[in-house]
Image (cartoon, rainbow, N blue to C red; front, side, top):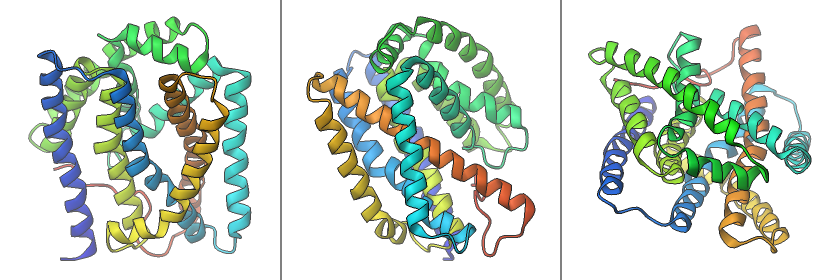
Length: 307
């Protein structure tokens, strides 16, 4: 079995797991089996550590492949500076930083549909992923945002609810039209809408981020870099993940006066923001580079199978 088949099979396995777990969790919550907020935070932190960090930790290999001749010291310094600026912005303007992070995250989640040529469908998909929990769990989302921003964010939730209606209905209709040609994508959209509406926000995000988004991007980036197996990719990025966890531990210690659940929320989401911004900047550089030159080897962000 060649490398492409191995990677595609791995992507499908994670997708299948999401399609099984998301409805089962939704049914359990409807029946009253709702885990505590602390349990949800622990599950989310585990998903970020196990799959979220690795999918961004391949960035040094991407930069080395695309920008040949650039020193690793320069790359790491630039990455750390960008991350530090995000954290400083969050301290100075928390509500604005949260709003910007949500928009960036929506754009990033839209890249899950790498083979979708219509930009507006990718945009609506990413917006739906973030906004759909506000339909039935607006109060929970507002509480999370308020802990992250330190001030009222009810306007964010109210606006997100309308986005969920419009964007969610659009991608649901598109999924119905593609039920025969792309049944897996259609099933994923339905599962995202179902779990986003029924699950508590943190558990929903844990399910989507840990089982669908992060594995897909990790596998696709590893394949684009020519890595033969997921194990090979993880071996290469173990040191970077460990260093990131050390920085997160320092951040945890600096928030010693904050309650443990609030501290976990800040470390996970502000940490994700600090890593997502430089990650997205690199992705933008890669796409701009691709438009001007032909890259050796497999293309970056190679479309994944959705059938």
